[in-house]
Length: 378
Image (tube, rainbow, N blue to C red; front, side):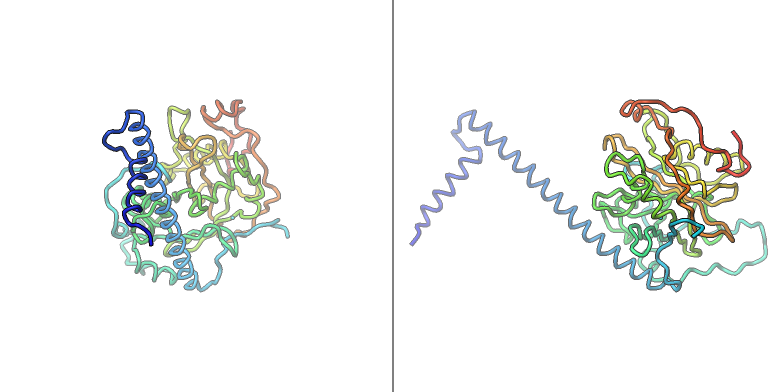
């Protein structure tokens, strides 16, 4: 039969060996303090890691459930939103804007900007959104990329600032993964939407949210897919509460967010275009920086744009770089098909000081064909 006193004695010796104890020599005291500190750091780190894993698993489960709910109400039965192949035979740091402190509630009241005093029929909300709005009336859309097995398939949120959904999921619960959300500056309503809808989403190590957007970077440092990813998934399906559209991807760029690292292209502040000159200038700046070109997807004033922004961890995680993908809405009467065989790499994208300090070189100037933008010259 074991001796309880002996067990207690062994336990006490272990404790005294690991924990600072009265009478310890200075060297022993230092060793034990270092051990205890390391043990505390390890426990805290493991707890944080375990919490992240649990939170991400919970997010994944909830997102899959919401996706099933949304698509079960899609009368078209189409979840792909992508067309590939030859046409002859797809946040985070501060992501812009002020922080109002508002974290809930619906969008601002819709206003009639048509100038007509004649009463209009209210726009009808698409059926698949009705059960989602019962969960959270901050939901203003849904984005899908990836064919029959989409790699991006999430609700799009919009509230009174660009901070809340960095750390809250679509239910408004605390979440390290956040949610996909639209820039708050111009509300997406039944009557209007910005000329350029800007969406933000985290680049999660788990591959969730906007992480897979970085695969469109044909100059990606790690695991570059070249242009193959674009050629496989050249379009995006984006639905607002009132309309479902397909968008054709036409550019992607690596963006610096710190003036200390060089030029900052302020893409997050281009929501509406006052005239053709403003639209052309924005598109030209995007094409200068794009790592690839898509000749089958031209641009013209009046096109509606979709901008998708996420963090890029190439080069240095501390640099707060962004990878940004741009698409334009399929025009009325235009085919959704894209001749991806025409796509090619931009051999000389416009970058910023930090990039050139790492990779060398400098920009050689604008080289893309001016006809990419209708009625434009440079």
